[in-house]
Length: 395
Image 1 (cartoon, rainbow, N blue to C red):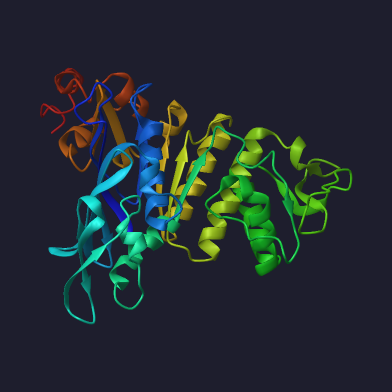
Image 2 (image 1 turned 90 degrees about the horizontal axis):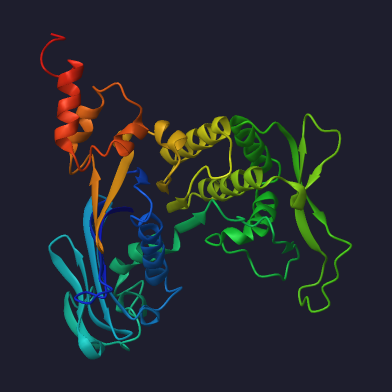
């Protein structure tokens, strides 16, 4: 299932009003914009929605909000609407194409379609819960399953943060399984993948790291004997990652791996796990390439884009880095423009003439943002005419 469109609002009609208008998505998306336009906040909304639909978070944790989201699933359009006020769900609706399958109002009362009865029947759900989660039933309401699966497949990585570098894992049979949605659990995830797919998973990760520019020979997990965990209920020593670079005579332990290299390794492990397990996912990477040099940043993006194109992964990234922008086709851009608390999104879907015209300028992609052609289309037209690129002189 693919995310197609999201509309979002918080604190409507108040001085704190924040509205995200008609944010549409493709298979690969790069969210760009000037500082403080709402890039990180917009990505956080998608992650929040994933947690709501998977049941990992309750709507009541938010004071006020409205979300209207559209998905495409197996050729069908699915639409979900959720409105929260004073930590309570006051409206919720789910549609398959033109058919209402669930609708509820204040107090949790509503109607839901029953497959066996072939009609809508009344129900009531606590107003602090999402009905699409509370009423999930593989027999009577299996039409809700795609929402749950999409929510469970949302992965949110803040590339500018540690990405699990400062954490360890316990590798025993009775330890809880790692959470693939939590980037901080990357060590446990690697242990699990290496156990399920010995040699194969490791070699693939090594190959991808080499593609980025990190010439690894090996990746292993080692025990930390110097740390004692007396409260550890799972037994066994804690473990951490060790990598061996071809140019170094000794392995490098996790806590000595450079932050940039570990971030790249963490993203590759997480994405390769999703691909190996054939998990349809929506992967969100905020500040992609942060902390990497130009060459490795470009290579990482190429690797991630190829992984996405060859799998069921929908990729949503954000950046302020000109090198990143210059190496991702402008057709995959989503440019955020903020006016007060209102965020508009310009992309090739809703501004095709603007995006298509820019390719005739001969400028770098970054100049599209730096020269503010989004807000000043007359400037773009003037640039093209002055350059002689669109006035017929090249015919």
